[in-house]
Length: 382
Image (tube, helix red, strand yellow):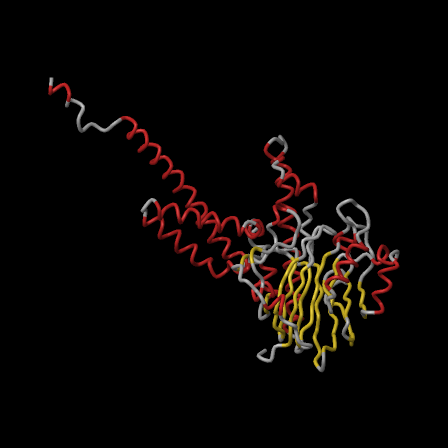
C-alpha cells in the first residue's frame, strides 16, 4: 500500500514540463527578436553619419528610431528579469549607447514655475516657425483667420512660415493688419496646396529687416538679417524636400490597411522608394545650406520644416554647432507633424549665439503641422 502511495513521488508533473517548454520557446523567440532589434539599433545610430544615397534603407530606420529604442529597452528588461545576463548585457550596452540620443525625442517633465510667474526681461524675444500648408485646414477651407488669431494670442516677435500662400492670405482683411506690427520678407511664388515642392517662404519680424537673400531656390532656404537691439541676427527659414508621403499613404499605414491589401507589396515599395529618393535630395540640399550657415559670423537662428527626424543625416548637418531649442528647454515627447501616430519631430528651431529659454508646440489643427514657439535671449557665452 505504501509503495503504491509513493510510486509517483519525485516525478516532474506534466504541467511543469509544459511550462518549461513554453518558457523555452518564449526565450527562443525573444532571443531572435533581440538580435533583430540590436542590429536595427546599431544601424540606427549610424544613420546621421551616412549619406542616404549610400544606404537606401537608412531613412526608414531614422523614422522608426523612437519605436526601435523603446523595443530595445523592453527586451533589456525582459532579459534582466529572466536573469539571462549575457543577453541582458548585450542589450544594456546597446541601450546605454543610445541613451545620449534620447533627448532628441524626449526630455523629463520638469515643473517650470518660472514660465508662469516670471516676467521676461526686454532682452528676450519669441520665435514661431510654422508650416501652414498653404493656409488650408483639415476641412479643405482657408485657415488664414485661425492662424492669425493664433498669432495674436501668442504674439511672437519673429515668424517663419513655410508653404506660405500669399494669394489666399491677401483675401483676408485681418492679414493686411499685420503690416502695422511686422515687417515682412516673402520669397518664391504662390503654389497650389498639393505642390509642396514649390511652396514659398515668408519671414515676419517686429525687428527691423536689414537685408535678405536666398540660399537655395526661394522655396527651399532663405535668410533675413534682423537688427535685434544692437546686434544682427541672421534668420534662416527652410522648407526642405518633402518626403512625398501624402495623406493617403499616412492612412494606409496608420489605419493598417496594408494588412488586407493584396497589392501591399507594390504600395509599400512605392512608399519606401519615395522616402529614399527624397532623402537623397534633402541630403544634397542640407550640404549646401550647412556651408552657408558655417560661414555666417553673426548670431544665427535656423528655423523651418526639415522633413526629417532628429536621427537623420539632414538634422546632424543642420544642427552642427548650434543649439536645438527642444534639447535645451523642451519637456516630454515632442512631435510637430500631425500624422504617422504623432511620433515625428520634423520642425525645428536651432540657434547660435542665442539661448533658448522656453519651448512649446501648440496643439492646433490649422495645418498638418503644429507651430513651434521658442522664447530666447542673446547668449554672451557664444
